[in-house]
Image (cartoon, rainbow, N blue to C red; front, side, top):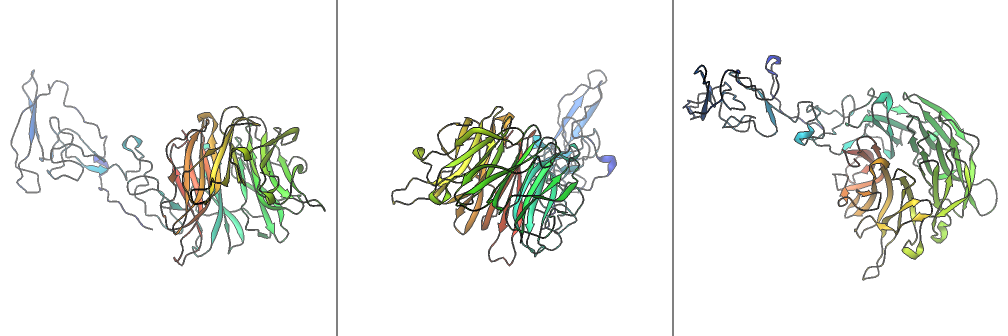
Length: 530
């Protein structure tokens, strides 16, 4: 896509501050009137004017709007009395513009949106100087609109835009003390998992190419996982076929990637999750089966501070059928959740782990409650939302039947003041179409979290989000993340810059009947969790 915003070509000598430069100190400001003959354009238009004078010298500096000289109380004078060019017919600076205002000099005006500076006091969210956004690279994706607002943009997909890119995930990074987000996706035709690092401004973080994150073989098209510790080390885990083995990569503090490390969990199944705690330790959770019998086991692989495996995988619980896991950190330690009996629509359960990812005997909890309407809960997700051990557990469940007896899947959450101490479920959306794939991210120090999910709609699916406090109270209404409503927007992934509260939502984007494959799209939401 191409976008062009017209800018004035400004000579360097004329580029100055936008503030009004006062008359000399010995001159007393006053008012007056004078007639003018219009600007140098030869229109002969009648102009407004004012006069300033000095009581000590009697000197007057006339303000004749349209004469090309800033005088009196004029904010600008661009040698005409035409509105819409930054300097109004009354020689005041128009909204959305900045003008030079040197006394007795011609004003040169330029739109604020497009000057390369993000003027938040003017309502700007971004400013890419109206860059021509080239797809594929080089060049930035079109993350910034013509009004200098963040807009939906396509994540870098390499030179061949005919390749299907799918199953995206996202993680916060802080390489070189510069906050960024790491977008990762599965490239079907290339048979690998690739990634790209972006600034929270929407610009590329490093270089122009993508990063190859696969180890060996062909990645299984199951969603990989990535998590980042405060140390800025990350663990990235994924499955490979045909062996279906579990591998991980370490992303170090400087962005260097170490690949080709296997985690030995037998008969590994889709449904990975990972988490990093404030102490810089990690866990990766997965479902596997060590031998015969009807039960599958939930395994956790702990990682130490350098993001290297700490011992061998630990069996923390059982399930009657493979299903998704969810992992999140506490103030010290972790929680890992799953469905104990997905074949019978059983309740969600969780095991608390210590700060090293070790099993805490007896610290086993039920997270959902059938007596409170949690029927057939699925799709677990969680995040620590308070400065202690408060967390939000998010999931989908069957709704209450409507007057016609129809039900739909709805997204709900419960706030836990501590493990085992949960409040009543809160319904995230009042919508009556099926909802799925919830994800959650929080800034514990701000006491806020945001839930994103997929919702069915006429002609496709869309990505929605909503912000809540750590007490479970909504902060505004639910909103749609994607701008292109037609199509199938699925697989939302979400991250946050903790110091600013800026949130990025990433998703799989398929526009039907467009003769184009899947692509990965994103949008930045500044200060959403501030």
